[in-house]
Length: 410
Image (cartoon, rainbow, N blue to C red; front, side):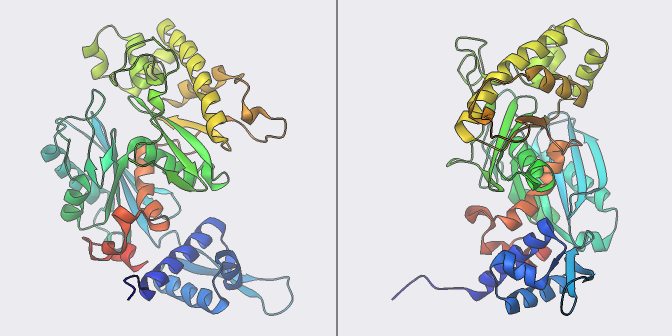
């Protein structure tokens, strides 16, 4: 007797999500194009289009003329059909975004974090969500979920990192569960770098280049790997710790125990160290400080840029030879003028597999999602998990999770 049966409702849900993704990424589409693109039968595609319309997620945009036969009705995603919230937590502040299904920012809030412990921060998240929704019951009803990101690792929704660049008091804290119960919403958590890569995949460079590497400037240096539109996180959910690639053996000591790690030369932390004298000074520093130093021609920051470009060039060479991506995207919290200067100084890049004469496109570029990058990436998490569920977190049991709502219906 087989213990492995089928569940038709879960199959229907998968088909709805596949069809929704097709319209999201390639619309406007007719029902026959949805069927052809997804491999569904014409009748199934037609039924699912009706279900998505009933859910308010897609809408008719008119009929396509100029072909033989009856003009085909086309469908696009309704930008008011669903929303997500993204919360970025760091040592100094909370940034929250309300984002529509197409990635447009609808509302923003920022709140200072006086104390980093969960007991102080979680009420701030509730306050941020209330402020973003601003009493709009229709938006709240149409929330797919909330994404929350911070520096460090998560395992099954529980914070699992400790170190000098992570927030204090969060080790073993079940952030996803606590927020879901407080907010009555599906909650998805990840580190800030992976989330930024997911945001770039859904709303930026990844829309036309589904395989790329993302280098993320936070206080340290992180990254994300996206392969065929899906984030690759590794066996322990710790892939793309790019900051700990050794680019200068025997160089500066790193908190990880090695010497010469990339983030000791390429990160906000390393830039702060370059222009400030003491640890106490850079612990309270912000990217605005770097921008002012750049604008006033600070010599120490200019040297940091030269050194950072040198070591970034080495890292880019290794990543290109390992992964053969469509491109390597750089983004995060480094102010845009400094990021532009860094990318320019990194050229010419070292020869690699990506320098083949047949290769097209830029090898190293700035990210297209540039405003509040980690919070925008956090807002992309519910959509990413909707389209590409992870068995451990987002399986059928989510139907019964707190406030599964629209996420569960789709």
